[in-house]
Length: 293
Image (cartoon, rainbow, N blue to C red; front, side):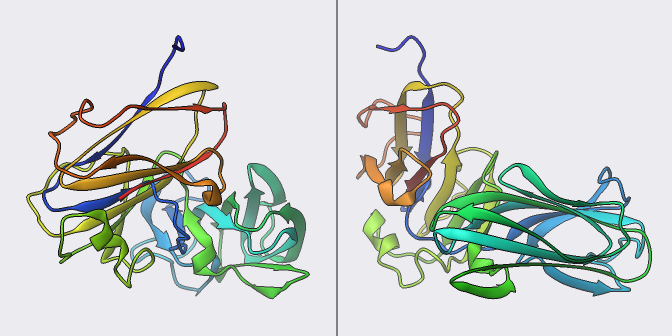
């Protein structure tokens, strides 16, 4: 028995709700998280929202109603999923100052410039893997725009497609919800033609628990990555009402997914004794992809 254990509690509370916890299907991206600031130092947040891409032309206007037209800044945080296993070139133009990080490394720093045209860097990607991306922008006067494109030997130069962009998975879980769902098992959810890429709504969670709202007949797909801080054996528990499945890959590659826990009948809230304890070994700083249905 390891001296230190970590319990990942994946819960499903709502009546008649099949749910997918931290899912590993091939899921299309929904865009990238955007933060808009009312200053040029990225200090005072004015608004946050999900943007569908990193090609934005605001002209003399503003990205968010009520924001000052000049002297604002923005930060875009998320992940990009590689299309091919080969070198990818990112090309950045902007009417304003910009900084770009790929996978935690600052690749372009033109923060002091009033405008940038076709600044480019090349990074090696592996198909299907997600890489952290962070873009910062500041506007000091006049028109405002950003335009980040990518290309490779197999990919003509183009704007980053929405389906390849994901909000940052660090510190949050994406929740996809389907309403008016008949049935009380996971199969009713996964059989939908709109599953997994066209839910009724998308939102973010800060934990793997969704308390009951009293609603019936809906299903959830909760998707994210785990980032263990210590290498060792971890136990995973799941509780649900009505049914749930937990899938996990022991790497950042969704192709390695395995179903590690299953609930087929309702449990009490936070009842970790009904289903078997699952013990897996994981490595420090290794992204683990998972799923609950």
